[in-house]
Image (cartoon, rainbow, N blue to C red; front, side, top):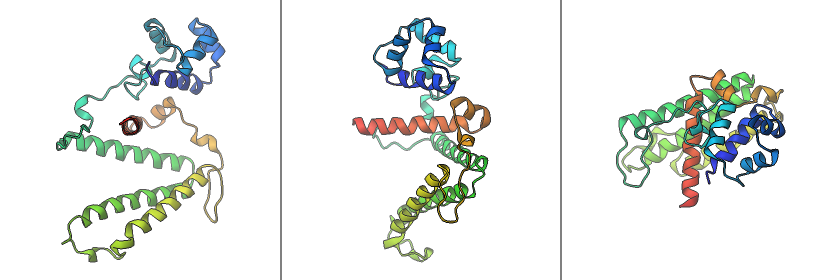
Length: 230
């Protein structure tokens, strides 16, 4: 049984604020059967797959989890990093692909923070991202014992732990501000509705960034599932 189909058809219905009863009636099935499909209890026919794809105006590939984009765009296998353990050097195209989806996803995050009109979100996200890049750079820099530590003012022995502590605070402040909780002098998001997001809102409001973010989510979660099932 496809594990993505139940989650995605339920997501599409809820994003459109359609009741299960109405969706079932529109699709010509009982509410109980639609409930079973959305919970993954029953497997649907190919005819119903096409019918519900047309109903939500999305692709069958999207409903089956083959692509994170509702329109059905699929990244070719050449674009996806090879992670089968063969230690082959990724191609320049794969490097560029990874850089693009990360950069675009970060741009979307900052666009959301600006939309929320929150200085705290912008500052804390910037610190969070900078410090994580800093940590990675120091790990790579420290790999060669001949690299001079005088490049840094913070001692090697405490640098990454100090950075991790601040990153944790950044994350806590982002959580608080985005949930409308004021911490100290930080501002906060006064209206959470400005952060209401659906797949269609992402695509329509951030057309230049949404595909990258949706693909980043899929690649990240595929990696999580793979590690957990290894």
